[in-house]
Length: 469
Figure (cartoon, rainbow, N blue to C red):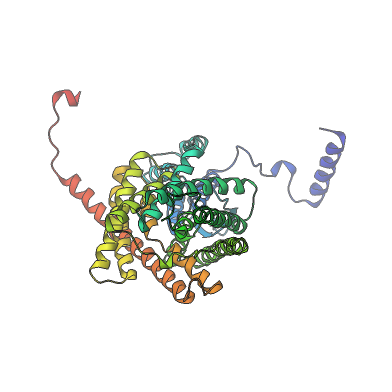
Protein backbone atom coordinates (compact mmCIF):
# COMPACT_ATOMS: atom_id res chain seq x y z
CA UNK A 1 0.00 0.00 0.00
CA UNK A 2 1.54 3.34 -1.03
CA UNK A 3 1.87 6.38 1.20
CA UNK A 4 -0.89 8.31 -0.56
CA UNK A 5 -3.46 5.57 0.18
CA UNK A 6 -2.41 5.40 3.81
CA UNK A 7 -2.73 9.19 4.13
CA UNK A 8 -6.25 9.15 2.65
CA UNK A 9 -7.37 6.37 5.00
CA UNK A 10 -6.01 8.12 8.10
CA UNK A 11 -7.62 11.40 7.09
CA UNK A 12 -10.95 9.74 6.33
CA UNK A 13 -10.90 7.93 9.67
CA UNK A 14 -10.23 11.14 11.56
CA UNK A 15 -13.12 12.94 9.87
CA UNK A 16 -15.62 10.20 10.74
CA UNK A 17 -14.34 9.88 14.29
CA UNK A 18 -14.67 13.67 14.72
CA UNK A 19 -18.27 13.56 13.58
CA UNK A 20 -19.03 10.82 16.11
CA UNK A 21 -20.72 8.52 13.65
CA UNK A 22 -19.12 5.12 12.95
CA UNK A 23 -15.64 3.73 12.93
CA UNK A 24 -13.82 2.37 9.93
CA UNK A 25 -13.83 -1.09 11.49
CA UNK A 26 -17.65 -0.99 11.48
CA UNK A 27 -17.94 -0.92 7.68
CA UNK A 28 -19.49 -4.13 6.29
CA UNK A 29 -17.16 -6.23 4.20
CA UNK A 30 -18.42 -7.74 0.95
CA UNK A 31 -16.57 -11.03 1.13
CA UNK A 32 -17.00 -14.36 2.90
CA UNK A 33 -18.71 -12.61 5.82
CA UNK A 34 -21.98 -12.22 3.91
CA UNK A 35 -25.01 -13.13 5.97
CA UNK A 36 -26.96 -16.30 5.06
CA UNK A 37 -29.85 -14.07 4.03
CA UNK A 38 -27.73 -12.19 1.51
CA UNK A 39 -26.17 -15.40 0.23
CA UNK A 40 -29.64 -16.85 -0.34
CA UNK A 41 -30.73 -13.76 -2.26
CA UNK A 42 -27.60 -13.91 -4.37
CA UNK A 43 -28.31 -17.58 -5.12
CA UNK A 44 -31.87 -16.72 -6.15
CA UNK A 45 -30.75 -13.85 -8.37
CA UNK A 46 -28.26 -16.06 -10.21
CA UNK A 47 -30.76 -18.84 -10.85
CA UNK A 48 -33.50 -16.42 -11.91
CA UNK A 49 -31.08 -14.67 -14.27
CA UNK A 50 -30.08 -17.94 -15.89
CA UNK A 51 -33.66 -19.17 -16.35
CA UNK A 52 -35.07 -15.85 -17.56
CA UNK A 53 -32.30 -15.42 -20.11
CA UNK A 54 -33.24 -18.81 -21.62
CA UNK A 55 -36.87 -17.82 -22.20
CA UNK A 56 -38.65 -19.30 -19.20
CA UNK A 57 -41.90 -17.40 -18.52
CA UNK A 58 -41.66 -14.74 -15.82
CA UNK A 59 -44.39 -16.42 -13.76
CA UNK A 60 -42.50 -19.72 -13.62
CA UNK A 61 -39.21 -18.05 -12.69
CA UNK A 62 -40.88 -16.04 -9.94
CA UNK A 63 -42.50 -19.11 -8.38
CA UNK A 64 -39.23 -21.03 -8.51
CA UNK A 65 -37.34 -18.17 -6.84
CA UNK A 66 -39.95 -17.73 -4.11
CA UNK A 67 -39.75 -21.43 -3.28
CA UNK A 68 -36.05 -20.94 -2.54
CA UNK A 69 -36.43 -17.76 -0.48
CA UNK A 70 -39.19 -19.38 1.59
CA UNK A 71 -36.64 -21.98 2.70
CA UNK A 72 -33.52 -19.88 3.28
CA UNK A 73 -34.88 -16.43 4.23
CA UNK A 74 -36.69 -15.62 7.48
CA UNK A 75 -38.40 -12.51 6.10
CA UNK A 76 -40.68 -12.63 3.08
CA UNK A 77 -39.21 -11.64 -0.27
CA UNK A 78 -40.92 -9.91 -3.20
CA UNK A 79 -39.62 -10.79 -6.68
CA UNK A 80 -40.55 -9.07 -9.91
CA UNK A 81 -39.24 -9.63 -13.44
CA UNK A 82 -39.49 -6.89 -16.02
CA UNK A 83 -38.15 -8.39 -19.27
CA UNK A 84 -34.51 -7.27 -18.89
CA UNK A 85 -34.32 -6.81 -15.12
CA UNK A 86 -34.92 -8.80 -11.95
CA UNK A 87 -36.03 -6.99 -8.79
CA UNK A 88 -35.73 -8.62 -5.38
CA UNK A 89 -37.04 -6.67 -2.39
CA UNK A 90 -37.17 -7.73 1.25
CA UNK A 91 -38.79 -5.93 4.17
CA UNK A 92 -36.56 -6.78 7.14
CA UNK A 93 -38.72 -5.28 9.88
CA UNK A 94 -39.13 -1.86 11.52
CA UNK A 95 -35.65 -1.83 13.04
CA UNK A 96 -33.71 -2.52 9.82
CA UNK A 97 -33.67 -0.91 6.40
CA UNK A 98 -35.46 -2.74 3.56
CA UNK A 99 -33.16 -4.58 1.16
CA UNK A 100 -33.50 -4.27 -2.62
CA UNK A 101 -31.39 -5.99 -5.27
CA UNK A 102 -31.52 -5.39 -9.03
CA UNK A 103 -29.85 -7.42 -11.75
CA UNK A 104 -29.91 -7.00 -15.52
CA UNK A 105 -30.82 -10.17 -17.41
CA UNK A 106 -28.05 -11.12 -19.82
CA UNK A 107 -29.27 -12.80 -23.04
CA UNK A 108 -28.01 -16.37 -23.29
CA UNK A 109 -28.42 -19.36 -25.57
CA UNK A 110 -31.28 -21.62 -24.56
CA UNK A 111 -30.03 -24.86 -23.01
CA UNK A 112 -32.74 -27.25 -21.83
CA UNK A 113 -30.25 -29.51 -20.04
CA UNK A 114 -29.10 -26.57 -17.94
CA UNK A 115 -32.70 -25.54 -17.34
CA UNK A 116 -33.54 -29.02 -16.04
CA UNK A 117 -30.52 -29.03 -13.71
CA UNK A 118 -31.55 -25.67 -12.24
CA UNK A 119 -35.12 -26.88 -11.77
CA UNK A 120 -33.87 -30.03 -10.05
CA UNK A 121 -31.74 -27.91 -7.72
CA UNK A 122 -34.75 -25.74 -6.89
CA UNK A 123 -36.87 -28.82 -6.16
CA UNK A 124 -34.24 -30.19 -3.76
CA UNK A 125 -34.09 -26.85 -1.96
CA UNK A 126 -37.89 -26.66 -1.71
CA UNK A 127 -37.92 -30.17 -0.19
CA UNK A 128 -35.45 -29.03 2.50
CA UNK A 129 -32.86 -31.60 1.42
CA UNK A 130 -30.01 -29.13 0.81
CA UNK A 131 -28.30 -26.70 3.13
CA UNK A 132 -27.40 -23.26 1.85
CA UNK A 133 -23.73 -24.24 1.60
CA UNK A 134 -24.57 -27.34 -0.42
CA UNK A 135 -26.93 -25.38 -2.66
CA UNK A 136 -24.24 -22.81 -3.46
CA UNK A 137 -21.72 -25.55 -4.23
CA UNK A 138 -24.25 -27.35 -6.44
CA UNK A 139 -25.03 -24.18 -8.37
CA UNK A 140 -21.35 -23.42 -8.93
CA UNK A 141 -20.84 -26.97 -10.18
CA UNK A 142 -23.81 -26.76 -12.55
CA UNK A 143 -22.74 -23.44 -14.06
CA UNK A 144 -19.12 -24.50 -14.43
CA UNK A 145 -20.03 -27.72 -16.30
CA UNK A 146 -22.77 -26.70 -18.72
CA UNK A 147 -23.40 -29.39 -21.32
CA UNK A 148 -23.52 -28.05 -24.86
CA UNK A 149 -23.50 -29.61 -28.29
CA UNK A 150 -20.84 -28.55 -30.84
CA UNK A 151 -21.74 -25.72 -33.16
CA UNK A 152 -22.02 -28.01 -36.19
CA UNK A 153 -24.82 -29.89 -34.42
CA UNK A 154 -26.69 -26.61 -33.98
CA UNK A 155 -26.27 -25.88 -37.69
CA UNK A 156 -27.68 -29.31 -38.55
CA UNK A 157 -30.63 -28.69 -36.23
CA UNK A 158 -31.34 -25.35 -37.91
CA UNK A 159 -31.19 -27.02 -41.29
CA UNK A 160 -33.65 -29.61 -39.99
CA UNK A 161 -36.14 -26.90 -39.03
CA UNK A 162 -35.92 -25.38 -42.52
CA UNK A 163 -36.22 -28.78 -44.20
CA UNK A 164 -39.21 -29.70 -42.03
CA UNK A 165 -40.91 -26.43 -42.93
CA UNK A 166 -40.41 -27.16 -46.62
CA UNK A 167 -41.85 -30.67 -46.21
CA UNK A 168 -45.06 -29.15 -44.86
CA UNK A 169 -45.65 -27.62 -48.29
CA UNK A 170 -43.86 -29.92 -50.71
CA UNK A 171 -42.46 -33.45 -50.97
CA UNK A 172 -39.86 -32.50 -53.58
CA UNK A 173 -36.62 -33.84 -52.11
CA UNK A 174 -34.26 -31.52 -54.05
CA UNK A 175 -36.18 -28.65 -52.51
CA UNK A 176 -35.90 -30.21 -49.03
CA UNK A 177 -32.14 -30.58 -49.41
CA UNK A 178 -31.76 -26.98 -50.56
CA UNK A 179 -33.91 -25.79 -47.66
CA UNK A 180 -31.68 -27.78 -45.28
CA UNK A 181 -28.59 -26.15 -46.76
CA UNK A 182 -30.11 -22.65 -46.53
CA UNK A 183 -31.12 -23.22 -42.91
CA UNK A 184 -27.69 -24.48 -41.89
CA UNK A 185 -25.89 -21.59 -43.62
CA UNK A 186 -28.32 -19.08 -42.14
CA UNK A 187 -27.63 -20.43 -38.65
CA UNK A 188 -23.89 -20.11 -39.28
CA UNK A 189 -24.41 -16.56 -40.52
CA UNK A 190 -26.48 -15.64 -37.47
CA UNK A 191 -23.69 -16.93 -35.24
CA UNK A 192 -21.10 -14.85 -37.04
CA UNK A 193 -23.26 -11.74 -36.88
CA UNK A 194 -23.85 -12.34 -33.18
CA UNK A 195 -20.10 -12.27 -32.56
CA UNK A 196 -20.00 -8.81 -34.14
CA UNK A 197 -22.48 -7.63 -31.49
CA UNK A 198 -24.95 -6.38 -34.11
CA UNK A 199 -28.40 -5.44 -32.81
CA UNK A 200 -30.99 -8.13 -33.57
CA UNK A 201 -32.78 -5.84 -36.03
CA UNK A 202 -29.75 -5.58 -38.33
CA UNK A 203 -29.00 -9.26 -37.86
CA UNK A 204 -32.47 -10.03 -39.20
CA UNK A 205 -31.96 -7.66 -42.13
CA UNK A 206 -28.67 -9.24 -43.19
CA UNK A 207 -29.88 -12.83 -42.77
CA UNK A 208 -33.14 -12.31 -44.68
CA UNK A 209 -31.25 -10.43 -47.40
CA UNK A 210 -28.94 -13.41 -47.83
CA UNK A 211 -31.89 -15.82 -48.05
CA UNK A 212 -33.67 -13.69 -50.66
CA UNK A 213 -30.55 -13.24 -52.80
CA UNK A 214 -29.81 -16.96 -52.62
CA UNK A 215 -33.33 -17.79 -53.83
CA UNK A 216 -32.99 -15.18 -56.59
CA UNK A 217 -29.64 -16.59 -57.72
CA UNK A 218 -31.09 -20.10 -57.82
CA UNK A 219 -34.02 -18.78 -59.82
CA UNK A 220 -31.59 -17.25 -62.32
CA UNK A 221 -29.67 -20.51 -62.72
CA UNK A 222 -32.90 -22.43 -63.28
CA UNK A 223 -34.27 -19.93 -65.80
CA UNK A 224 -31.04 -20.07 -67.84
CA UNK A 225 -30.94 -23.87 -67.87
CA UNK A 226 -27.79 -24.26 -65.81
CA UNK A 227 -29.61 -26.49 -63.30
CA UNK A 228 -31.94 -28.94 -65.02
CA UNK A 229 -33.12 -31.05 -62.07
CA UNK A 230 -34.36 -27.92 -60.23
CA UNK A 231 -36.86 -26.87 -62.86
CA UNK A 232 -39.91 -27.67 -60.73
CA UNK A 233 -38.61 -26.08 -57.54
CA UNK A 234 -40.58 -23.13 -56.22
CA UNK A 235 -38.14 -20.43 -55.01
CA UNK A 236 -40.80 -19.16 -52.64
CA UNK A 237 -40.43 -22.37 -50.63
CA UNK A 238 -36.69 -21.81 -50.38
CA UNK A 239 -37.39 -18.39 -48.93
CA UNK A 240 -39.89 -19.92 -46.52
CA UNK A 241 -37.42 -22.58 -45.39
CA UNK A 242 -34.83 -19.96 -44.46
CA UNK A 243 -37.10 -17.29 -43.06
CA UNK A 244 -38.78 -19.73 -40.68
CA UNK A 245 -35.55 -19.60 -38.65
CA UNK A 246 -35.86 -15.84 -38.34
CA UNK A 247 -39.55 -15.26 -37.74
CA UNK A 248 -40.44 -14.53 -34.14
CA UNK A 249 -43.24 -17.06 -33.91
CA UNK A 250 -42.07 -18.51 -30.60
CA UNK A 251 -41.45 -15.03 -29.24
CA UNK A 252 -45.00 -13.89 -29.91
CA UNK A 253 -46.41 -17.01 -28.22
CA UNK A 254 -44.13 -16.39 -25.22
CA UNK A 255 -45.24 -12.77 -25.09
CA UNK A 256 -48.90 -13.73 -24.88
CA UNK A 257 -47.99 -16.39 -22.30
CA UNK A 258 -46.62 -13.62 -20.07
CA UNK A 259 -49.72 -11.51 -20.76
CA UNK A 260 -51.95 -14.39 -19.65
CA UNK A 261 -49.89 -14.63 -16.46
CA UNK A 262 -50.43 -10.85 -15.97
CA UNK A 263 -46.83 -9.81 -16.53
CA UNK A 264 -47.92 -7.04 -18.83
CA UNK A 265 -44.70 -5.02 -18.88
CA UNK A 266 -42.69 -8.06 -19.92
CA UNK A 267 -45.35 -9.07 -22.46
CA UNK A 268 -45.41 -5.58 -23.97
CA UNK A 269 -41.63 -5.50 -24.31
CA UNK A 270 -41.58 -8.92 -25.96
CA UNK A 271 -44.30 -7.94 -28.40
CA UNK A 272 -42.34 -4.85 -29.40
CA UNK A 273 -39.28 -7.02 -29.93
CA UNK A 274 -41.35 -9.34 -32.14
CA UNK A 275 -42.45 -6.36 -34.22
CA UNK A 276 -38.89 -5.05 -34.62
CA UNK A 277 -37.42 -8.45 -35.53
CA UNK A 278 -40.15 -9.19 -38.05
CA UNK A 279 -39.77 -5.69 -39.53
CA UNK A 280 -36.08 -6.47 -39.96
CA UNK A 281 -37.00 -9.57 -41.96
CA UNK A 282 -39.35 -7.58 -44.18
CA UNK A 283 -36.68 -4.92 -44.73
CA UNK A 284 -34.09 -7.51 -45.72
CA UNK A 285 -36.49 -9.26 -48.09
CA UNK A 286 -37.49 -5.91 -49.60
CA UNK A 287 -33.86 -4.97 -50.26
CA UNK A 288 -33.23 -8.39 -51.80
CA UNK A 289 -36.27 -8.12 -54.06
CA UNK A 290 -35.23 -4.66 -55.23
CA UNK A 291 -31.75 -5.92 -56.09
CA UNK A 292 -33.23 -8.95 -57.88
CA UNK A 293 -35.56 -6.85 -59.98
CA UNK A 294 -32.66 -4.66 -61.04
CA UNK A 295 -30.97 -7.84 -62.28
CA UNK A 296 -34.10 -8.96 -64.13
CA UNK A 297 -35.11 -11.67 -61.64
CA UNK A 298 -38.52 -11.65 -60.00
CA UNK A 299 -40.54 -14.04 -57.89
CA UNK A 300 -43.20 -13.81 -55.17
CA UNK A 301 -41.51 -14.05 -51.75
CA UNK A 302 -44.67 -14.61 -49.68
CA UNK A 303 -45.94 -18.12 -48.89
CA UNK A 304 -49.63 -17.22 -48.64
CA UNK A 305 -50.33 -18.68 -52.08
CA UNK A 306 -48.81 -22.04 -51.20
CA UNK A 307 -50.82 -25.15 -50.42
CA UNK A 308 -49.92 -27.79 -47.85
CA UNK A 309 -48.70 -31.23 -48.83
CA UNK A 310 -50.55 -34.42 -47.93
CA UNK A 311 -51.24 -35.18 -44.27
CA UNK A 312 -48.49 -37.80 -44.05
CA UNK A 313 -45.86 -35.33 -45.20
CA UNK A 314 -47.21 -32.70 -42.84
CA UNK A 315 -46.81 -35.13 -39.94
CA UNK A 316 -43.26 -35.89 -41.04
CA UNK A 317 -42.48 -32.18 -41.25
CA UNK A 318 -43.95 -31.54 -37.79
CA UNK A 319 -41.81 -34.31 -36.25
CA UNK A 320 -38.64 -33.01 -37.92
CA UNK A 321 -39.35 -29.42 -36.86
CA UNK A 322 -40.05 -30.29 -33.22
CA UNK A 323 -37.10 -32.68 -32.87
CA UNK A 324 -34.72 -30.27 -34.61
CA UNK A 325 -35.83 -27.41 -32.39
CA UNK A 326 -35.14 -29.53 -29.31
CA UNK A 327 -31.73 -30.55 -30.65
CA UNK A 328 -30.82 -26.95 -31.41
CA UNK A 329 -31.50 -26.06 -27.78
CA UNK A 330 -29.15 -28.72 -26.37
CA UNK A 331 -31.75 -31.33 -25.41
CA UNK A 332 -30.81 -34.90 -24.50
CA UNK A 333 -31.52 -37.70 -26.98
CA UNK A 334 -34.50 -39.00 -25.02
CA UNK A 335 -35.96 -35.50 -24.90
CA UNK A 336 -35.51 -35.10 -28.66
CA UNK A 337 -37.51 -38.27 -29.28
CA UNK A 338 -40.17 -37.18 -26.80
CA UNK A 339 -40.60 -33.72 -28.33
CA UNK A 340 -40.85 -35.21 -31.80
CA UNK A 341 -43.64 -37.52 -30.63
CA UNK A 342 -45.43 -34.72 -28.76
CA UNK A 343 -45.12 -32.42 -31.76
CA UNK A 344 -46.65 -35.14 -33.92
CA UNK A 345 -49.55 -35.57 -31.47
CA UNK A 346 -50.16 -31.83 -31.31
CA UNK A 347 -50.13 -31.45 -35.08
CA UNK A 348 -52.44 -34.47 -35.44
CA UNK A 349 -54.86 -32.77 -33.03
CA UNK A 350 -54.71 -29.64 -35.15
CA UNK A 351 -55.40 -31.45 -38.43
CA UNK A 352 -58.12 -33.61 -36.88
CA UNK A 353 -59.85 -30.57 -35.40
CA UNK A 354 -59.61 -28.72 -38.71
CA UNK A 355 -61.02 -31.77 -40.50
CA UNK A 356 -63.92 -31.83 -38.05
CA UNK A 357 -64.94 -28.35 -39.16
CA UNK A 358 -63.19 -26.12 -36.62
CA UNK A 359 -61.44 -23.00 -37.81
CA UNK A 360 -57.71 -22.56 -37.36
CA UNK A 361 -57.99 -20.60 -34.11
CA UNK A 362 -59.90 -23.16 -31.96
CA UNK A 363 -57.99 -25.99 -33.69
CA UNK A 364 -54.69 -24.45 -32.58
CA UNK A 365 -56.09 -23.97 -29.07
CA UNK A 366 -56.97 -27.68 -28.84
CA UNK A 367 -53.52 -28.60 -30.11
CA UNK A 368 -51.97 -26.35 -27.47
CA UNK A 369 -54.08 -27.97 -24.73
CA UNK A 370 -52.98 -31.43 -25.86
CA UNK A 371 -49.31 -30.46 -25.94
CA UNK A 372 -49.39 -28.73 -22.54
CA UNK A 373 -51.23 -31.63 -20.90
CA UNK A 374 -48.96 -34.34 -22.30
CA UNK A 375 -45.81 -32.34 -21.56
CA UNK A 376 -46.78 -31.91 -17.91
CA UNK A 377 -47.55 -35.61 -17.48
CA UNK A 378 -44.34 -36.97 -18.99
CA UNK A 379 -41.81 -34.29 -17.99
CA UNK A 380 -40.99 -35.87 -14.63
CA UNK A 381 -40.74 -39.36 -16.08
CA UNK A 382 -38.36 -38.31 -18.85
CA UNK A 383 -36.49 -35.86 -16.60
CA UNK A 384 -37.02 -32.94 -18.95
CA UNK A 385 -38.53 -29.46 -18.39
CA UNK A 386 -42.15 -29.32 -19.44
CA UNK A 387 -41.39 -25.90 -20.92
CA UNK A 388 -38.90 -27.53 -23.29
CA UNK A 389 -41.46 -30.07 -24.48
CA UNK A 390 -44.13 -27.40 -24.95
CA UNK A 391 -41.86 -24.96 -26.79
CA UNK A 392 -40.47 -27.57 -29.17
CA UNK A 393 -43.84 -29.19 -29.84
CA UNK A 394 -45.73 -26.01 -30.71
CA UNK A 395 -43.15 -24.77 -33.21
CA UNK A 396 -44.98 -26.37 -36.18
CA UNK A 397 -48.12 -24.50 -35.07
CA UNK A 398 -46.76 -21.01 -34.44
CA UNK A 399 -47.97 -18.40 -36.93
CA UNK A 400 -44.60 -16.91 -37.74
CA UNK A 401 -45.17 -17.02 -41.49
CA UNK A 402 -48.62 -15.46 -41.14
CA UNK A 403 -47.05 -12.68 -39.07
CA UNK A 404 -44.41 -12.17 -41.76
CA UNK A 405 -47.06 -12.13 -44.51
CA UNK A 406 -49.09 -9.58 -42.57
CA UNK A 407 -46.21 -7.13 -42.29
CA UNK A 408 -45.24 -7.77 -45.90
CA UNK A 409 -48.83 -7.02 -46.89
CA UNK A 410 -48.70 -3.68 -45.09
CA UNK A 411 -45.45 -2.73 -46.83
CA UNK A 412 -46.05 -4.32 -50.25
CA UNK A 413 -49.80 -4.95 -50.73
CA UNK A 414 -49.26 -6.17 -54.30
CA UNK A 415 -47.41 -9.25 -52.95
CA UNK A 416 -49.60 -10.03 -49.93
CA UNK A 417 -52.97 -8.29 -49.92
CA UNK A 418 -54.92 -8.00 -46.71
CA UNK A 419 -51.98 -7.47 -44.39
CA UNK A 420 -54.09 -6.14 -41.52
CA UNK A 421 -56.31 -9.24 -41.61
CA UNK A 422 -53.24 -11.49 -41.58
CA UNK A 423 -51.77 -9.65 -38.60
CA UNK A 424 -55.01 -10.01 -36.66
CA UNK A 425 -55.14 -13.70 -37.53
CA UNK A 426 -51.54 -14.21 -36.36
CA UNK A 427 -52.33 -12.52 -33.05
CA UNK A 428 -55.46 -14.59 -32.45
CA UNK A 429 -53.68 -17.84 -33.30
CA UNK A 430 -50.80 -16.95 -30.97
CA UNK A 431 -53.22 -16.19 -28.14
CA UNK A 432 -55.03 -19.48 -28.81
CA UNK A 433 -51.80 -21.51 -28.70
CA UNK A 434 -50.51 -19.75 -25.58
CA UNK A 435 -53.83 -20.03 -23.76
CA UNK A 436 -54.26 -23.66 -24.79
CA UNK A 437 -50.76 -24.64 -23.65
CA UNK A 438 -51.23 -22.82 -20.33
CA UNK A 439 -54.58 -24.50 -19.73
CA UNK A 440 -53.10 -27.88 -20.61
CA UNK A 441 -50.33 -27.36 -18.05
CA UNK A 442 -52.84 -26.27 -15.39
CA UNK A 443 -54.92 -29.40 -15.97
CA UNK A 444 -51.88 -31.64 -16.22
CA UNK A 445 -50.39 -30.70 -12.84
CA UNK A 446 -53.25 -31.96 -10.62
CA UNK A 447 -53.68 -34.94 -12.91
CA UNK A 448 -50.03 -35.85 -12.47
CA UNK A 449 -50.33 -35.47 -8.69
CA UNK A 450 -53.36 -37.76 -8.71
CA UNK A 451 -51.41 -40.42 -10.60
CA UNK A 452 -48.59 -40.13 -8.08
CA UNK A 453 -50.99 -40.53 -5.17
CA UNK A 454 -52.61 -43.56 -6.80
CA UNK A 455 -49.21 -45.13 -7.38
CA UNK A 456 -48.14 -44.51 -3.79
CA UNK A 457 -51.38 -46.00 -2.45
CA UNK A 458 -50.90 -49.27 -4.29
CA UNK A 459 -49.66 -52.19 -2.15
CA UNK A 460 -45.93 -52.72 -2.36
CA UNK A 461 -44.82 -56.18 -3.40
CA UNK A 462 -42.65 -57.92 -0.80
CA UNK A 463 -38.99 -57.77 -1.62
CA UNK A 464 -36.99 -60.88 -2.23
CA UNK A 465 -34.21 -61.72 0.19
CA UNK A 466 -31.51 -60.73 -2.29
CA UNK A 467 -33.27 -57.37 -2.89
CA UNK A 468 -33.36 -56.66 0.89
CA UNK A 469 -29.66 -57.24 1.05
